[in-house]
Length: 327
Image (cartoon, rainbow, N blue to C red; front, side, top):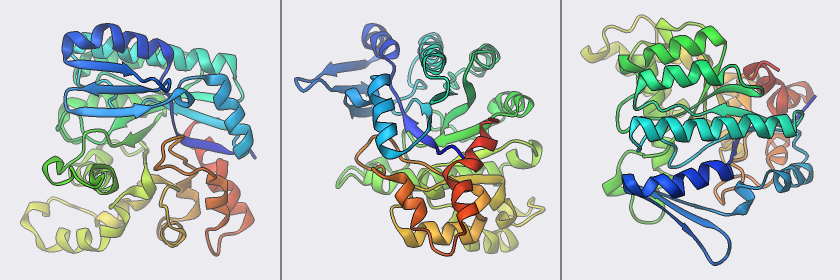
């Protein structure tokens, strides 16, 4: 069975050039460092990365070292929502076209997760219809909020409907996280902000009725689900006593298996508990390639999960992702 990493980030050179050329008109900037790396800023969102995130052939070599057969390529911070609809569409198209081209160059090794300009749902729908026809594009990559608008907003539901129609999984990832004023120090924006924002996104999808309306739509959560799996008891209790949740027909815990989760828990106890809670068939291999907050040996992480059969290890290492990506 193929090993598939569903959490592997990539910045295509074409996307970088477009960002560098047109971004400054919209308060964005790109700096090329003396070491050959990059620093991006788009409004209040920043990120830094090096050539490992850009050069496809070098990525293939690293995948071989890690015994990873397939990367599902995804754009990460700052994504495209900070931009005007026109530039957001152009940046999305640049990433999507490059990801499809990368797949065609390495058809057995690389797939693409599409980026859409969600700040303008009409533009997003148009691009979704186009990108769904491109070779190698196998799902949607979406931030856990869109410019501080939550994912249960009805303006996004046409996108969800189209993804459901296509059979596409929506893969979530934080970008502009909650608690900015309180997470400035100690890299808390990532250490706390990323898992918090993922949990909040899951809450809106559940409490906001998205999962009820789109019963066949699948969502994948990064970083072992963030805070979501570990708050489920509190959510169940709250749904039974709080008037704000009287509309709920099912307990939140009944939605646990509507999501899938990656293995970036950074603690064998967390990953073991996650598998026990949601089932081995709902957990997927992830590395966060190749950030320092990721996993250098994601397969070793899977092998260390306790009380999991060889068959279940194979599901986590690739079988579950193959289903989500319709391989």
